[in-house]
Image (cartoon, rainbow, N blue to C red):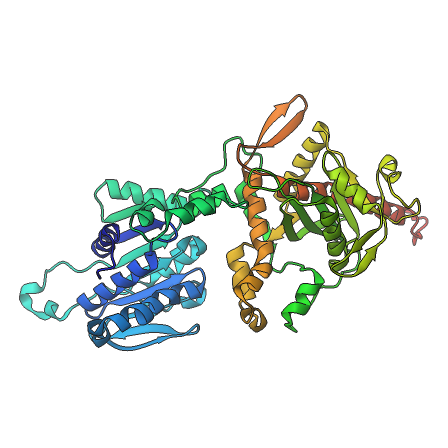
Length: 537
């Protein structure tokens, strides 16, 4: 194993020598290779060892075994000679050694309760629910490995081997159980108990030549650089929202329930999967397209954020608000942005468009209230008008234009109202967001048509999930202060809030429409025919 750097050799020793191991590692440090090497070492040196590998996504588990089969075995005749049989497929994955040791992949779910193991490895364990770890994976443990020499009388009282657990992942949010587990391991470690917990930030793989420093610089300078994700994935630092945070990550994460985005209609045709069809509107459904406008691009500036909010009426006279699609535009000419809004209006069957008309947003509004020609599609879009502001409606080039646009002119009091309303809808579960990108990609990979796409094409279908995560990161990083009777929500230095603003605008208009819905429901009840006129007792 000449390819091992010094820090990897140390990590290999720690894995093999400790009963409970937790590794918080950055991307690019080769943690999968190290764990795969540790599996080979222990399976060969300890005959009859049973090893199970589990992960939040099954393909991550099989990745460890693929390292052994595809990377190690071709370069090591000695290792190949130790292995009796192997199979690595999505449905079944195992490696059997000639000495009776075996490593197998299990799925991190309730159905895996019957498995047995001497060494449980949880890869990317932050993606595995805590109850699955506690009630399923940790219960895998069989009796201790019993080598043949225990049958000799002189070894009758020889200490038995402990079954072991290894947890591997990048860092995550402090609200998550992994942070409490990390701290518990640390406290046990400093008491000299058989626990080890260690973090490996990106500086280690950079120093060993595994991750080019130039690539680090380039990633940090990208327009969509996310400081929170970087601190967790590359710096091995758990992240918790500020004490002055207005929104809670726990609340936001709890409403990530929407499994499928509503993609623009052309994306369904391009995918060509008969099982994935463009969702038609439900009775009473309203779709809002909300836009927070920016015309200057770059990493230090906000981007234009566009959000599709689906409103579904319930029996209580309220709208359930589903965030079903989100995209951003990194600046650009006002006319180009207006044309993109018109395209999405058609592609997503939108009812109303919400536009921030303060500042640079007025330029986009003025484009939307005049005729536009889309050269890409060869379509002419007729002018719109404003619904909620007669002064803004007067800017339309066509006095009889359909009233489609809601104008948002944010003031201190309105910003406060929007922030409070958004938080309230999140806490009450009225607002629902797309699921996280890991679960979203796993769902997409069930489509054969999706798997046939190029990586670049696949990214387009993953994009709404990543955008939603970016929205969550933006939102939990917002701090607040009291300004008179109002709450002022603001971004900390270096952060954005364009996605937050886009969704906050949409939610604000959704509340306005909800009041209209309740008013209509009340009127219908008021004028409903009476079935009983008089009841005498």
